[in-house]
Image (cartoon, rainbow, N blue to C red):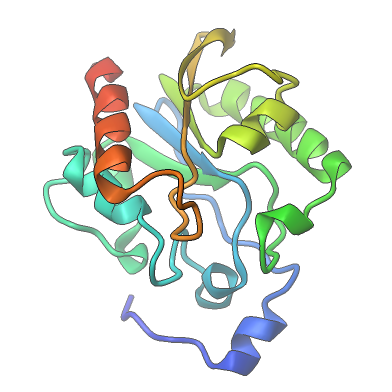
Length: 183
């Protein structure tokens, strides 16, 4: 699909839209964002907002041979990776989600993981993981809990708004995850 930039009106109209999962059974890693932003929902592709560092972190950690764009997200499936979200509806910021939405999203995500059986579920957002999975003391990295046979891993939110982690920090943490992936 050809990349395009949405108009301001298209972005504003994207509130409450969803973005289709990039998913298949038995993936190496299923990456889960918190929820789509408005820009992402407007274009219909994961982590699409300029400034989001997900695609760069994937490439820097050698999950992908070349730097993918949101518009080439389905290429992830060829390598055994996929993308979903805890909460499906788009918002301008993740902090606009209610506690109940995140808790319900966590339940839906666990159901999805049991159905598709990825080797690892990588949740991109520590705060959202803590709430959705009722793990208030969790930290970034591999978690003690599993969903069936699926290992749970937490990474920082790659949004450009997350100033706690710079690109080199994200790449290092994504590489730690990559070292756990087998197949």
